[in-house]
Image 1 (cartoon, rainbow, N blue to C red):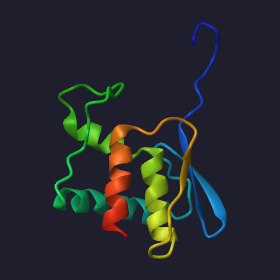
Image 2: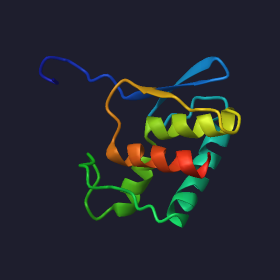
Image 3: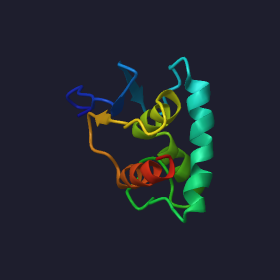
Image 4: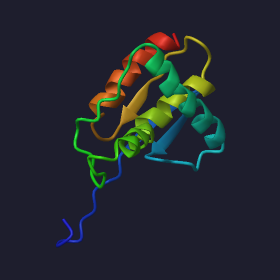
Length: 122
């Protein structure tokens, strides 16, 4: 791809909350509510661990050495679909469905977390 000057489209996730569609990129901090999103995102791992969830870091993660498990955890936490899910939790009303649209595939860890968060946050 480099040889031909081609670039891969970045992974993004869209979420509609209160008739507004928002798009998130990995590690995105451009949203006006990014401080609230990241504050909520920081509390989610504790809730997941309280129900026995362990992150699936088995998928190959580029640029992260095998011994850097903490970095893998942090990288997974910045996926665009997690940001979109978190925004849905803070921006929507309780029990409101959260619908996320991805332009690429969803990793297994984010897929598993979506199922668990659905139960944890109703």
